[in-house]
Image 1 (cartoon, helix red, strand yellow):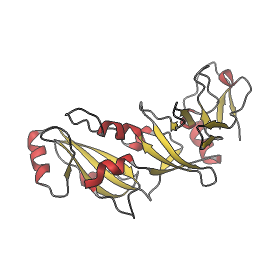
Image 2 (spheres, rainbow, N blue to C red):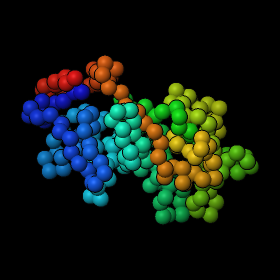
Image 3 (cartoon, helix red, strand yellow):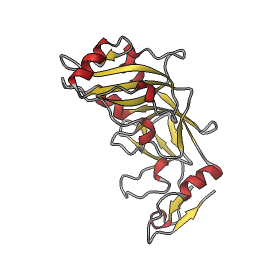
Amino acid sequence: MIVAAADQQGESCSAKRCGEYFTISHPFWLADNKTGRSCGPLDFEVICRSNGSPVLRSSGDDGFAIVHISYEERSLCVVDLYKRNHLHNNTNSCHVPSWNASDQLGRMFRVEPINLSLVLYNCTKADAAAAARRDRALVPIRCGNESNAFVREGGRYDAADDYARYHMEGCEATVVPVLGVHGMANASNYEQLISGVFLLTWQTGKLASQIISSFLWLPGVLYIMVC
């Protein structure tokens, strides 16, 4: 783990409670809302909401709600709040999330291949949207009178897959990991699936140290490696 001594002032990240059911401990740490100080790498920062629910920090605004955490297995079950909130807006316009989960997560996290995937499409051209409506593999996303957004099953999740086989001219694609039900992900149930969890794991030890060593080092800040 890496800590900034300027912020740390010699104190390590101690385990803290978040709500009734969660204890946040190494390598994770709770943000201090009063002082704004950090005591660990930003990838592992957790925000404890007023309702007692922990949220893993992400590059987006919403983060990932932590539903279950196993320190022994180094795994998390999380909900992508960015995608859930954007698909459940109360307006009549379609707002399809444009960020893939892997882009929002820190480099020490991995979306496990046990997850399935949904592919969301935002078709910006009228002829592309018309063609998508004729494709039986695509399910219209329910918003507005005539949706230009669609979803399809993408099979087993693979972060290395460029999903070129799902490319549609005139449509922007976003890949969403979902845990599915009994190893299946029915695109018609996309709201339920995206509101549900998917499985993450995190890296520690030598591999994590190698990843951290590739980070941008800030001038004027003393960094300490803690094993």
